[in-house]
Length: 224
Image 1 (cartoon, rainbow, N blue to C red):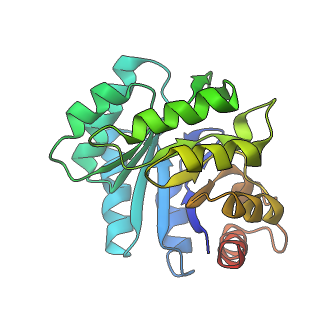
Image 2 (cartoon, rainbow, N blue to C red):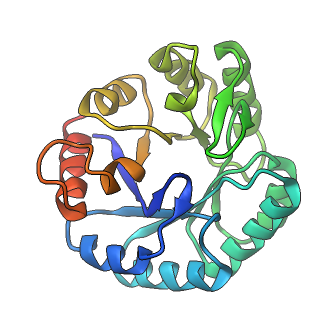
């Protein structure tokens, strides 16, 4: 079984009606929910986190800001909000220093991350080596792999290499839109995956409302 993290996001930004959507999906059997620093003020992050925790959900904040100052500000906001996991980010050494003693788990991006929406660059060997380096750091729990945001390598070969090199869970984030992808990522050893935009766009099979799409993703995760 693979772990499904539903991201309250579209185009790498938290959706405006994230709280409303959270209320709609909290009774689906979902266990993991997330949002991004872009599109969510510090106050909105706190509100979302409190509501998700009240529903018994594990909360993930993914950092997709492109510069260091914004990333550090996002980490401060995530700490204040009380999220369970911080995903992403490119400045792991500085992030770990801020997160020391908070109990928040951290899974930064391996590889070279460019642009917004974020894309992944580098060879399989480079990305896997970076993942290994990151997960050997105190304060790093795993990695946030933008597997399907790489335009040239074999995604499942990349995922398997990163899993092998990492000492913590590998979460596949970005552009997962099908059961075939989910099963492939699970077979390659990924602990879990995120879906956001594809659910809001109704790309998964079945009914196109958000609740039905979340249920479909959960079923795919359970079968992976």
